[in-house]
Amino acid sequence: MSDLKMKRNEISINHFKKNNVDFFFSRKMEWKESDIVLHEADIDRYSKIHNSDRKNEFLGVRNLRNQYNSRLEIKYLSNGKPVIENSSEHISISHSKNYVAFAVAPYKIGIDIEEIHERILKVNGRFLNQRELELFNLNSLADLTVAWCAKETLFKLNDNSGLDFKTDLIIKNWDKNSTIFAEMKQNSQWVNVNLHFEIKDNLVLCFNFE
Image 1 (cartoon, rainbow, N blue to C red):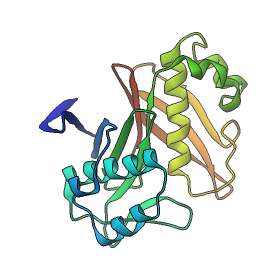
Image 2 (tube, rainbow, N blue to C red):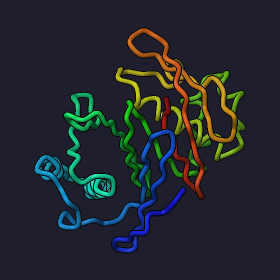
Image 3 (cartoon, one colour):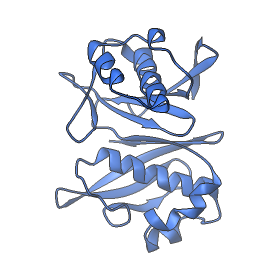
Protein backbone atom coordinates (compact mmCIF):
# COMPACT_ATOMS: atom_id res chain seq x y z
CA MET A 1 0.00 0.00 0.00
CA SER A 2 1.10 3.54 -0.59
CA ASP A 3 -0.05 6.74 1.05
CA LEU A 4 -0.82 9.59 -1.30
CA LYS A 5 1.45 12.53 -0.66
CA MET A 6 -1.44 14.78 0.26
CA LYS A 7 -2.79 15.92 3.58
CA ARG A 8 -5.82 18.06 4.23
CA ASN A 9 -6.49 19.20 7.78
CA GLU A 10 -3.88 16.62 8.91
CA ILE A 11 -5.89 13.74 7.40
CA SER A 12 -3.94 11.55 4.97
CA ILE A 13 -5.59 9.79 2.06
CA ASN A 14 -4.50 6.18 1.63
CA HIS A 15 -4.61 4.65 -1.83
CA PHE A 16 -3.62 1.36 -3.40
CA LYS A 17 -4.42 -0.36 -6.68
CA LYS A 18 -4.77 -4.11 -7.09
CA ASN A 19 -6.63 -6.31 -9.57
CA ASN A 20 -7.78 -3.18 -11.44
CA VAL A 21 -9.40 -1.83 -8.27
CA ASP A 22 -8.51 1.68 -7.06
CA PHE A 23 -9.12 1.64 -3.30
CA PHE A 24 -9.08 4.86 -1.26
CA PHE A 25 -9.61 5.22 2.48
CA SER A 26 -9.05 7.76 5.25
CA ARG A 27 -9.95 8.49 8.82
CA LYS A 28 -13.18 10.38 9.44
CA MET A 29 -13.02 14.02 10.39
CA GLU A 30 -15.34 16.99 10.77
CA TRP A 31 -15.52 18.23 7.21
CA LYS A 32 -17.19 21.44 6.16
CA GLU A 33 -19.27 21.51 3.00
CA SER A 34 -16.99 24.23 1.64
CA ASP A 35 -13.95 21.92 2.00
CA ILE A 36 -15.12 19.49 -0.68
CA VAL A 37 -15.84 19.81 -4.40
CA LEU A 38 -19.50 18.77 -4.69
CA HIS A 39 -21.88 18.24 -7.58
CA GLU A 40 -25.42 19.60 -7.54
CA ALA A 41 -26.73 16.11 -6.77
CA ASP A 42 -24.24 15.85 -3.88
CA ILE A 43 -25.44 19.15 -2.41
CA ASP A 44 -29.07 18.11 -2.70
CA ARG A 45 -28.48 14.76 -1.00
CA TYR A 46 -26.26 16.30 1.67
CA SER A 47 -28.95 18.84 2.57
CA LYS A 48 -31.31 15.96 3.43
CA ILE A 49 -28.89 14.34 5.90
CA HIS A 50 -29.46 15.50 9.48
CA ASN A 51 -27.15 13.25 11.50
CA SER A 52 -23.74 14.92 11.93
CA ASP A 53 -21.79 11.67 11.69
CA ARG A 54 -23.58 10.71 8.48
CA LYS A 55 -22.83 14.17 7.10
CA ASN A 56 -19.12 13.69 7.79
CA GLU A 57 -19.20 10.23 6.18
CA PHE A 58 -20.89 11.68 3.11
CA LEU A 59 -18.32 14.45 2.71
CA GLY A 60 -15.45 12.07 3.47
CA VAL A 61 -16.52 9.74 0.67
CA ARG A 62 -16.81 12.68 -1.76
CA ASN A 63 -13.32 13.74 -0.79
CA LEU A 64 -12.04 10.26 -1.65
CA ARG A 65 -14.01 10.33 -4.90
CA ASN A 66 -12.34 13.61 -5.77
CA GLN A 67 -8.88 12.09 -5.29
CA TYR A 68 -9.74 9.67 -8.08
CA ASN A 69 -11.83 11.90 -10.35
CA SER A 70 -13.86 14.87 -9.11
CA ARG A 71 -15.97 14.78 -12.28
CA LEU A 72 -17.60 11.48 -11.32
CA GLU A 73 -21.14 12.08 -10.11
CA ILE A 74 -22.41 9.55 -7.58
CA LYS A 75 -26.05 8.55 -7.87
CA TYR A 76 -28.03 5.93 -5.98
CA LEU A 77 -30.27 3.12 -7.19
CA SER A 78 -33.63 2.45 -5.54
CA ASN A 79 -31.96 -0.23 -3.39
CA GLY A 80 -29.46 2.31 -2.08
CA LYS A 81 -26.44 1.09 -4.05
CA PRO A 82 -24.12 3.87 -5.32
CA VAL A 83 -23.42 4.08 -9.06
CA ILE A 84 -21.75 6.34 -11.60
CA GLU A 85 -24.27 7.18 -14.29
CA ASN A 86 -23.33 6.79 -17.95
CA SER A 87 -19.98 5.25 -17.11
CA SER A 88 -18.30 1.89 -17.57
CA GLU A 89 -16.77 2.27 -14.10
CA HIS A 90 -18.34 0.76 -10.99
CA ILE A 91 -18.00 2.01 -7.43
CA SER A 92 -18.57 0.87 -3.87
CA ILE A 93 -18.54 2.76 -0.56
CA SER A 94 -17.91 1.65 3.01
CA HIS A 95 -17.78 3.19 6.49
CA SER A 96 -16.55 2.00 9.85
CA LYS A 97 -16.57 3.80 13.18
CA ASN A 98 -13.53 5.90 12.34
CA TYR A 99 -12.91 5.39 8.60
CA VAL A 100 -14.47 5.89 5.19
CA ALA A 101 -13.58 4.00 2.00
CA PHE A 102 -14.29 4.38 -1.72
CA ALA A 103 -13.32 2.05 -4.57
CA VAL A 104 -13.56 2.12 -8.37
CA ALA A 105 -13.27 -0.83 -10.77
CA PRO A 106 -14.02 -1.65 -14.42
CA TYR A 107 -16.37 -4.39 -13.19
CA LYS A 108 -19.09 -4.65 -10.54
CA ILE A 109 -17.42 -4.10 -7.19
CA GLY A 110 -18.22 -4.52 -3.51
CA ILE A 111 -15.93 -3.36 -0.69
CA ASP A 112 -15.80 -3.21 3.07
CA ILE A 113 -13.56 -1.61 5.67
CA GLU A 114 -13.65 -2.74 9.29
CA GLU A 115 -11.68 -1.96 12.42
CA ILE A 116 -10.42 -4.91 14.44
CA HIS A 117 -12.24 -4.79 17.77
CA GLU A 118 -13.28 -7.26 20.43
CA ARG A 119 -16.99 -6.62 19.82
CA ILE A 120 -16.72 -9.07 16.90
CA LEU A 121 -16.52 -11.88 19.48
CA LYS A 122 -20.13 -11.23 20.49
CA VAL A 123 -21.66 -11.54 17.02
CA ASN A 124 -19.74 -14.20 15.07
CA GLY A 125 -22.54 -16.73 15.53
CA ARG A 126 -24.95 -14.37 13.81
CA PHE A 127 -23.17 -14.29 10.44
CA LEU A 128 -21.08 -17.49 10.26
CA ASN A 129 -22.66 -20.89 9.62
CA GLN A 130 -21.35 -24.04 11.28
CA ARG A 131 -18.86 -24.90 8.55
CA GLU A 132 -17.53 -21.32 8.50
CA LEU A 133 -17.10 -21.37 12.27
CA GLU A 134 -14.72 -24.28 11.72
CA LEU A 135 -12.73 -22.35 9.09
CA PHE A 136 -11.76 -19.45 11.33
CA ASN A 137 -9.96 -19.15 14.63
CA LEU A 138 -12.78 -18.03 16.89
CA ASN A 139 -10.29 -16.57 19.37
CA SER A 140 -8.68 -14.35 16.74
CA LEU A 141 -10.11 -10.85 16.40
CA ALA A 142 -8.34 -10.46 13.06
CA ASP A 143 -9.71 -13.73 11.63
CA LEU A 144 -13.27 -12.95 12.65
CA THR A 145 -13.03 -9.40 11.31
CA VAL A 146 -11.80 -10.77 7.97
CA ALA A 147 -14.84 -13.08 7.90
CA TRP A 148 -17.26 -10.24 8.67
CA CYS A 149 -15.56 -8.01 6.09
CA ALA A 150 -15.96 -10.75 3.47
CA LYS A 151 -19.66 -11.16 4.22
CA GLU A 152 -20.25 -7.41 4.00
CA THR A 153 -18.42 -7.29 0.68
CA LEU A 154 -20.63 -10.08 -0.71
CA PHE A 155 -23.72 -8.29 0.60
CA LYS A 156 -22.78 -5.07 -1.21
CA LEU A 157 -21.97 -6.95 -4.39
CA ASN A 158 -25.32 -8.76 -4.42
CA ASP A 159 -28.39 -7.13 -5.99
CA ASN A 160 -30.93 -9.12 -3.97
CA SER A 161 -32.67 -7.94 -0.82
CA GLY A 162 -33.47 -9.96 2.29
CA LEU A 163 -30.19 -11.86 2.21
CA ASP A 164 -29.28 -14.22 5.04
CA PHE A 165 -25.59 -13.86 5.88
CA LYS A 166 -25.32 -17.47 7.06
CA THR A 167 -27.12 -19.22 4.19
CA ASP A 168 -26.98 -16.88 1.15
CA LEU A 169 -23.44 -15.49 1.48
CA ILE A 170 -20.99 -18.35 1.92
CA ILE A 171 -17.26 -18.46 2.63
CA LYS A 172 -15.99 -21.74 1.17
CA ASN A 173 -12.33 -21.41 2.06
CA TRP A 174 -9.49 -18.91 2.51
CA ASP A 175 -5.72 -18.96 2.29
CA LYS A 176 -5.24 -16.91 5.50
CA ASN A 177 -3.01 -14.59 3.53
CA SER A 178 -4.98 -12.50 1.04
CA THR A 179 -7.69 -14.51 -0.75
CA ILE A 180 -11.15 -15.73 0.24
CA PHE A 181 -13.10 -18.16 -1.94
CA ALA A 182 -16.82 -17.53 -1.60
CA GLU A 183 -20.19 -17.96 -3.25
CA MET A 184 -23.43 -16.05 -3.02
CA LYS A 185 -27.02 -16.72 -3.94
CA GLN A 186 -28.31 -14.24 -6.48
CA ASN A 187 -31.56 -14.52 -8.41
CA SER A 188 -31.96 -18.17 -7.33
CA GLN A 189 -28.50 -19.08 -8.65
CA TRP A 190 -25.17 -19.58 -6.91
CA VAL A 191 -22.31 -17.38 -8.10
CA ASN A 192 -18.65 -17.99 -7.22
CA VAL A 193 -16.80 -14.90 -5.97
CA ASN A 194 -13.11 -14.45 -5.17
CA LEU A 195 -12.29 -11.82 -2.58
CA HIS A 196 -9.03 -10.07 -1.76
CA PHE A 197 -8.39 -8.86 1.78
CA GLU A 198 -5.60 -6.91 3.42
CA ILE A 199 -4.86 -6.16 7.05
CA LYS A 200 -3.26 -2.79 7.71
CA ASP A 201 -2.61 -1.90 11.33
CA ASN A 202 -6.02 -2.31 13.00
CA LEU A 203 -7.98 -2.32 9.73
CA VAL A 204 -9.28 -5.04 7.45
CA LEU A 205 -9.99 -4.08 3.83
CA CYS A 206 -11.83 -6.37 1.44
CA PHE A 207 -13.07 -6.32 -2.17
CA ASN A 208 -13.98 -8.77 -4.92
CA PHE A 209 -11.88 -9.36 -8.01
CA GLU A 210 -12.53 -10.97 -11.37
